[in-house]
Image (cartoon, rainbow, N blue to C red; front, side, top):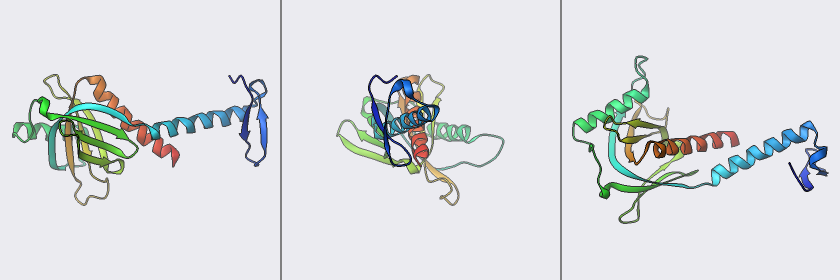
Length: 187
C-alpha cells in the first residue's frame, strides 16, 4: 500500500497522480507489471558469488536423443566414466578452489590462488546445468557448454565443480535459472 502520491505515465502519454485508495483494477495491473519489470531488472543487475572446487572438464560429451534415458542421466554417466578412467578426480584439494560469479553475462570462474580468470562461459553457451550427488556424499554441478542446435553432432564440453553443500549447489542452479527466466521475460 502506498502512503504517498505517485506520478506514473499513462499509455496515452499524459501523466496523472494516483493515490493508493483510488487505484482502479487497471492501475493495479500496471503496478504488478511494473513490479515484475523491476524484479527482472534487479535480477539482470545482480552478480552472485560462490566458492567451489573445480574438478575438471570432460571433452566431446555426446548425448544421444534416445528416449530410453534422459540427457541428465547420460551426462552424469559420462562424468562418472571419466572419473573411473582417471580423467577426473574423485576428490578435491584446496588447490582446486575457485570463485565463480554468476551474472547476466554468464559464469566467470576465477582461480582463487592467483586471482586470475580461469574460464568464462557466456549465458548463450550454457546448454545445461545439473546438480547431482556423486554417490560419495559430495554435491557436484555439471556445466554443459555448447550452443544448442549449433553443434553439428551435438558434442559438448562439460565442466564439473564440487560444492560445499546441497544448498549451495541448488542456489547456483536457481541463480542461473532466474537469469534465463529474466532474460526471456524481458525479450
